[in-house]
Amino acid sequence: MLQELISEYGYWAVFVGTFFEGETILVLGGVAAKLGYLDYWTVVLAAFVGSTLGDQLWYFLGYRYGHWVLVRLPGWRAPMDRAFRLLNKYDTWFILSFRFIYGIRTVSSVVIGMAKVPPRRFIPLNIVAAAIWASVVAYLGYAFGHAIELFLEEFHQYANYVLGGLIGIAILVWIVHTIRRSRQSRAVVVEENPGGPPAFHHIDAAATERKPDSAPEAAAPARREPAGSQVSTGVSARAPHSAQEPS
Image 1 (cartoon, rainbow, N blue to C red):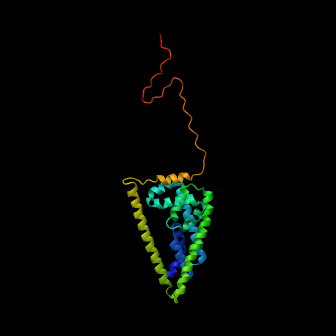
Image 2 (spheres, rainbow, N blue to C red):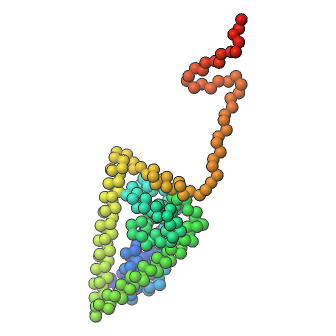
Image 3 (cartoon, rainbow, N blue to C red):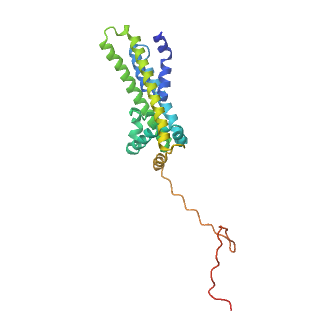
């Protein structure tokens, strides 16, 4: 039963899981490939496509609606602060490697978009990074399945139980992670701005610092008033004293 489900829906599970965050689902996909339930290179392809499209979506959300994302997801504030620092320090290397940094994978794409990294630069780097990440993580899962096989003489006899246990652990980890992130989100709102929306001025400032160079805005020309006209300011102006007093 489990084998049939994995064979039928396994690639879609890898695609959907990697679209959102999915290191765990990709490792499981690699294990399933070692067990013969899935094809290894199809698992890599599904992970590559899911990861590329997912991070591209988060990038464009950050590029167009970055502050809205911050307000809606205040629990992302701390990892986004960290991602901004790493992006400012390592730039291209960070874009290529953020998928391997625990805790900031999803928020990093939003941060890169908020920093106004041009799409023509991010898209090719994102494709290269997704290909590397999918190949490495899937291989780790495949190697993990091989290691289990070496320790269990009758590995294929217990394969369904092993994979079922790994899936159960992955679900439990995801639930715990989701609960923790939800609690952190509520704590940020209460701590930073009780009774109102969260403030993210320092993050917005960091994003502004990385915006593409542009010519400074020209100062608005002074408005010239026609002769004889007066601008009402709510304060009566006194006429200047004449140089000569009338006789």
